[in-house]
Length: 226
Image (cartoon, rainbow, N blue to C red; front, side):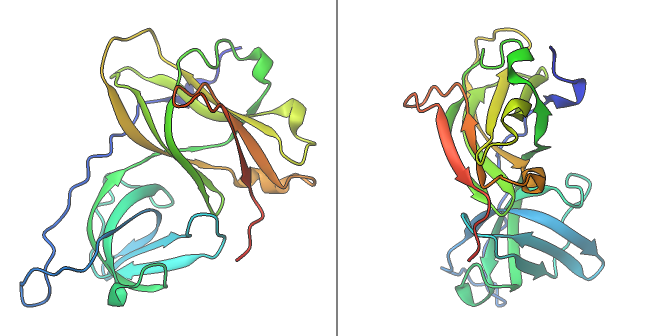
């Protein structure tokens, strides 16, 4: 079984353009810059609105800014990496922020299928640097071989495990053909919200061919409320 063509992804790099940081008088400021994967919730002539949650939390935080994000590169509802100064220097409190720059993040949704029918789902390893849940999104930072060709890259839940409290989800990674290039770090964000429709689901297992420390199974909780 071959995964559908719409799962073929061109990865987005993490280069981040940062504006100069200064106060209203043009003087440099020592306020710490915060970096988060946020969702672009709204854009209008008065500014931009973003939503996010802290890792391992379901509490929705809403940020607003007078600056307008360039939506030619980011669609409403998509996640991206934002560098910003929080109001009063305190992050994760809904209110006004000052964005400094951003980079694109590879976005996708959870796929459904039978892993036994996906040929070579783990043929090309992933060097997992970090992974975390933010509300219903599974976020990852991973090193992957640089390749300008589309690749199969998806998180797929095995339909045979849908009745389990922790269904098995697989990080499918398959290059079009072997490459001899350098590795590059990418941010990935997968919408796992459809799992909440399952009666017994409390979370999920993520299985992958991990070339970092050979840890090839992680468990994540979905129903975190704080």
